Image (cartoon, rainbow, N blue to C red; front, top):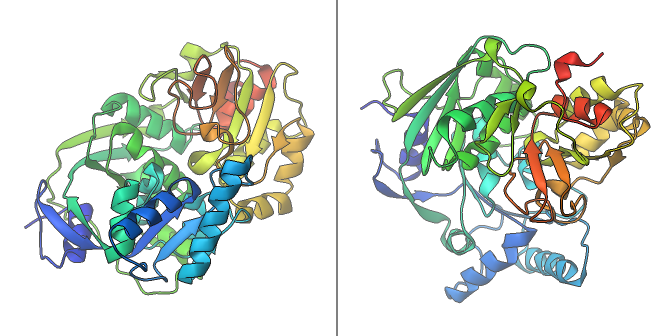
Length: 419
């Protein structure tokens, strides 16, 4: 029977030859990850089940990343509890405030590989589908069960196939591809479905670009986003992943619930307008909209090539006096690489404030909170009311290039028109 890559991975981890969408399976987990905001709750849920120890201390990863460093006593206590749990359990892998955002740190440190089943107590765990893994976010109680048993029940999702062909024009980025996808599919159009990306534009895309695209599958209601692994995947994982892995791909005759085709060569920079991720317009439709703060970072667009793209536009120039620019690299590895290439200096010389790696302004956790009436233009993934501070604020989503171009002018601007 023909199967999608998502079906094949779940079937293998459930010990079955094949499975159908809608079927319920119990599958073995390769890695269970929990960041600071959910780790303690998940661990307590495990204890309430009467389980004293996690099922495998080498397959559980805790991180302090969302509010890092801690901003108040409550957050500091949460971080302390995470450290104590990691020490008590003897976790092989625990990452403190000097690592970065969970979804960047995991693949950097070799915890993600093709064909694996990864669950995380964070909705954007679908990011790791970029590596050909079935990766999905789960609630804290489900994570408690995962910590206790190393297994979880899954409903096998249907799959939407998004075919992206053509060549992306200059200053049009993977972020624009996924925002276009959100517009076409809708904020709930892929509820409990896998979104499988393919086509020549995806095959030529870097791992950073693929991570950006898979990261936002959840914004369409998706259970996961996924890209079939290839030589680009192997090149990234070389010297990172210690175990052998198997390349799994969809059968040519696999059935999909829906197909969407995107012509990359015809795409212009996209902007998601308040207060919904699928309220997407071409940048030319919203150009001139005044902004107060610009944020470049997050698990969506805080990687090296994102910072480099912004630096190309900002290098040798100064941002508008009417805006503040906040930049947050997604990990210390990214920060170090950007620093070595002179990117950090270029962003700071342009007037940007470069923060330590963390989730930062993305969810209004510890820096970059906006005030009532203010407008944020952000490279992150969500723009609902109150996401970055005041419920009376406005959040627009865009690519790093659009963000950088807009920082120069103080209004939403088309990066293709930057001189």
